[in-house]
Image 1: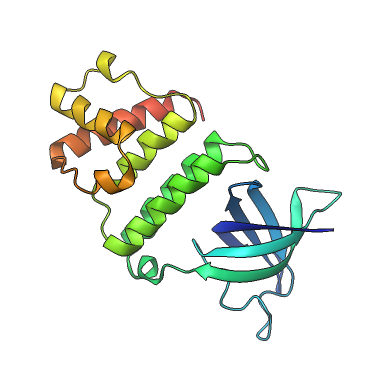
Image 2: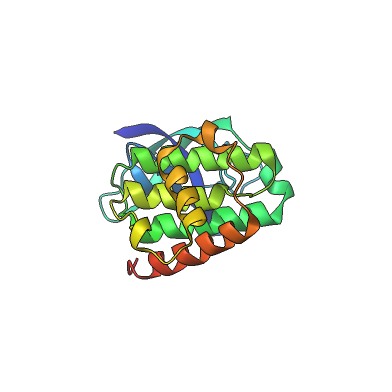
Length: 201
């Protein structure tokens, strides 16, 4: 029986001369690997649909022998064309995807992680600049995972601690008005990099 859900494409790579592997991230199914058979053929129904960070409704049939399932149908919902015009944005999202892959298990529902990732993708596509959004994502992701840093015990200065706390509790709309300095963002980025490394993900 086919299963249906909505998800965002995290990774696409060739499997054979005619097929590709597509890694999806969905709120109710979690991270799923599928094979799109015949996707590389000129007249494939998958043509133009399987690209990084596309959001789509898709159906798949589970394999009984492996974790690589069969992709059946894809109906695009959002494509974020501006992302493909900026290599820095794509590189930024690729690093975020690596974090998600290290910190979560496959085929486990991840509704909150999915929502904040989609927020990040939409913001980057709309604004076309990274600003403080990747830092905000990492902070909120750590909070969802239950490993929020103890900001008071950190060696960050008071101003940077205050910014970090606002990033933790504020919604995305409010955070659009937040204006951390380049120095604060750099300090937060370095702190988070070390903190995430210590989680052994």
